[in-house]
Each structure stands twice: as structure tokens, then as C-alpha cells.
Length: 304
Ligand code: MLT
Ligand code: MN
Ligand code: ZN
Image (cartoon, rainbow, N blue to C red; front, top):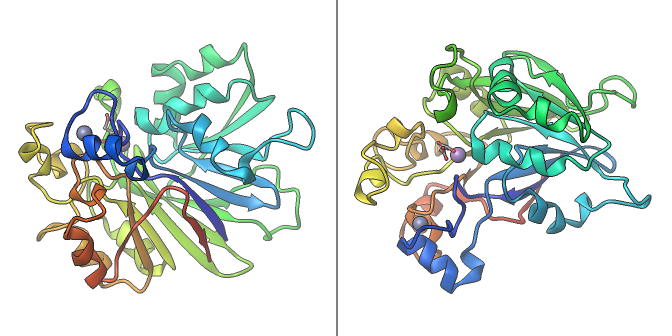
């Protein structure tokens, strides 16, 4: 299985355009500390890739990764579609940038599709530009990642949506409750038996998520905030990390203690610009390393 890490920042990116916090200022002074919005590209088949979430940085993310470049025909692209883990703006705004596509496939759970298609009006706005095809990401459920299974049955990657939380985006707080607003993606390759779990937004550690994490070879997890008080101490929100829909890394309710017990290779992504980990010299990196945990970096290739 082959994954390219296209970005590792939470909403706003690092630096965030209107932010002069130490993390953002540090990234302005040291361009190597910049992080694009969290996203992955997953190879579904030879020369066919799915983007996991479509961020506002999507144009640069495609240019940064030659495997996603078009060719050999002038408008031939290896980007087959987009899989959404949720309907948050930082994970969906990039879809509009793909409007030049001949066709575009989007996999999403029912509530996420409803929000993006109707509240954000993706369908009505993009239909004059391209042919959008929605495929339901069944939750729970397992399905081939490639919709038009060209190859022999069972040869391609399988994707499962693991329910994580019912947290709705701010623009859809009044939408109906549903367990599938936020999911983790489990990507399984039958040919190698390898499994990756991608969960960039984790508001609660459910039994289903724990089981999926315990069975995975690689877990890429929500690392938005280092600790529970960070949003308040950084002055960006009156809420706690968990209150903002992101379990913190550190502390009694944090995810580091859980990840450290798993056999998988574990990496944190979706780092907020207030997270001390955005400074490569921060002592928190050593704390994670002692637990055997990693921080994902933009441009990382993960091969399993
Ligand atoms: C989140 O991850 O909680 C959201 O992306 C926050 C936001 O930018 O609205
Ligand atoms: Mn986000
Ligand atoms: Zn900042």
C-alpha cells in the first residue's frame, strides 16, 4: 500500500494568514516549518489515486507530488476522486478547485454528502463545470476504493468507514444527528494484508475506533492539540480541545497513552498552529519519541 502525506495542518494551515502566534510566526521565519492542510493521497491502483479530503491547498498539494501530475494525454489525471472523512471546510473546500475535471467521484457518508451537496451547494454550483458522481461511503461497511473495479475482483484496496463522532461542522449545527458525521477511514490491501487507519478528527475514542486502531499496521491520528487546555491558554477559543471536537495528545484523556499500547506505527497529523509540536525543537517531540510515536510531515511517503 502506498500513501503520500499531502499536508498535516489543522484548519488555517501553518502559518495561518491572520495569525501571529509563535507557531505561525515561526513558520514565516522558517519555511521548513510550514504545513499545508491535512490530507493524504492513496494509490488505489497503478496510476490511480484518491485524495483523502480536499483542502484549500489542494492545487499546491497536487503540484508538490509528481505521482499526481497529469499526463501523458493533455487532460489525463491520475486523481480518480476524493474520499471525505467529514464535511469540515478544511476538508472540503478543495473540491471546487477540481472543477476542470472531466468527471469527479466523491465518496462520503450520507450526512456528509447532504451537507456538502446541499448546504455548501457543491452539486448545484459544480454541475455546469464537471460531472460529479457521489458514492455512499457506507458506515459501518467495507467497499472497493475504486468504484469501477477494472481489475480482477478482490485485487484493489478496500475502504471502510469507522464511525467516530456525530460532530457537525459549524455551518450545519442544526442538521440531523447522525453517527456518520465524522468517520475514520480504514484502508485494507488484500494483496499484502496491510491496513492503515486515517482519523484526522477524533472527538471521542469509541470502541469501534479502538478496535480498528488495534488491528491496523499504521494509524494516522488527530494531533490537533497537545493538551486539553491549549485552545484556552493560546487564547483562540473559550473551549477545551475535546470541546472543540479533538481529543488532545497528552494528559489523562489524551490519545498518546492509548496509541503507545498499540502494535501499529502511529503518527499524528492535523496539527493546529498553537500545538507546540509545530516547533521542531519543542521538548514534546522527545516525549512522543519515548512512547514510540511520530509526527507526520508534509511530503512523507508511507509504504506498507
Ligand atoms: C476542526 O477540525 O475542528 C474544524 O476544521 C474547525 C474549523 O476550521 O471549523
Ligand atoms: Mn479541521
Ligand atoms: Zn497561529
